[in-house]
Length: 127
Image (cartoon, rainbow, N blue to C red; front, side, top):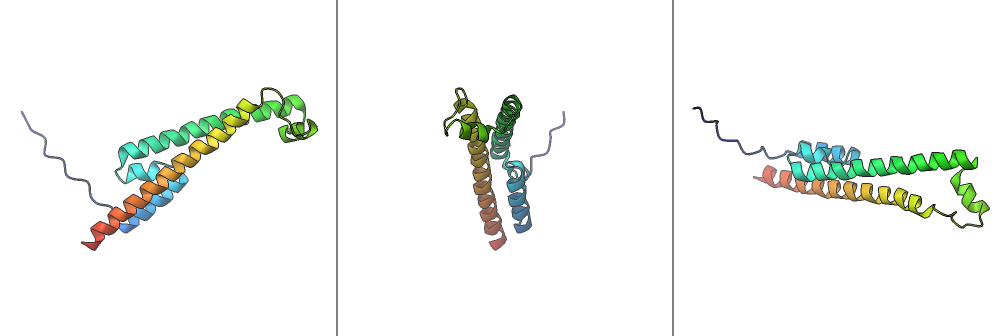
């Protein structure tokens, strides 16, 4: 029976690692966090970003369908309706706004995580 060697503690991030994490997180929320070893936080951030993308794609599909049905942009349909939303449009507009809010949440969380990783790197470089 062979025993596996004990796991080594994760290597603390350097300043360059922290910068790479920040840029990765700004490009794809959660990717830099995952790479820096913050697995749970990174996975949740990435999940939020993907959910926001899927909601945004659903809204975009509605937008294109409505554009094709009406023959003009949905914004022009609202203008022609004296600034009132046609019946049934509110849920789709909230879907689009919800996707933006969800992505903003994922991006903000990833940015804060990046700042924490940078602080951790500065603490270890000061030693």
